[in-house]
Image 1 (cartoon, rainbow, N blue to C red):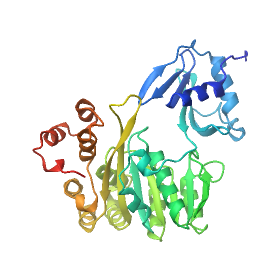
Image 2 (tube, one colour; image 1 turned 45 degrees about the horizontal axis):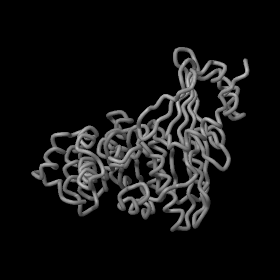
Image 3 (spheres, one colour; image 1 turned 180 degrees about the horizontal axis):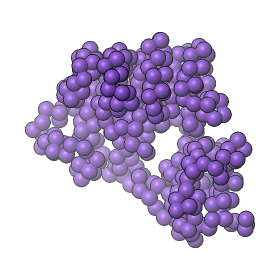
Length: 364
């Protein structure tokens, strides 16, 4: 391999200094970074295959080096000591290596710093059940959960176990004890991690992502046996999350699973990060579903369409739809009308809110 003049630590430091959330590197292309949701090409020569190979050699952990040439996609963490952590994905495109870094800052922000609803504090007070945070890639799910875990850590004496792929935010024990376990290093799978964590005297279990039926079953079992389980799912809204979980199962199993979810689910949060009027800044819009007795009843009856109507009228339970959250950002002058409509999944409803002819325009 020829000597490379592209030094990844220097580049990552510069990317973090300008507020980048992600870094994209691939052979034959100029490096790119994402700032405030927008991809920007950096004015450097296109990277060579030797450059990318040198990056991979520099950042890859010892335990994965024999797998890199055998597997197409690999996730792991990388750290520049005393500066920042990164979640890394190695992949192939057109038979060439590519690397994407997600910036994971050391500082874990509180809900207020992130602009998240105070309602999330309620989720931290549950002693058992299931809480799900959802949204597309890059919507801030990991950051929100880190804030939730640190909120518990600062206020309650509990044992929190995290099972991640890879470990992202690093927590410092405060009132709680936090045990962080990484797939393929500390445990072979999410399912095994959950199973054995139940023997480690946990109060709270964070599962990095619910990806399959087996993880759902293990999570529900943990939630039913007196633990607060927090996880993420890739869905677009809070209500759709319930359907997504149920659809992991065969039709013959779904009545039982609906009953199990109705009894264990405490709430869901769906997020989007929306560019503000201020340059290089984004704020979260959050849809929040609290599982009240009427919501439980609709889940059990498979009438999820009625759940959304409850969320729209559920401000007394601190529930809020995505459109209500987006409207609030618009009404406070933090985002433009065009941006609000672009990020809305129901533009006609949001336009009614803006005209003041829709009941959802009340302040939340």
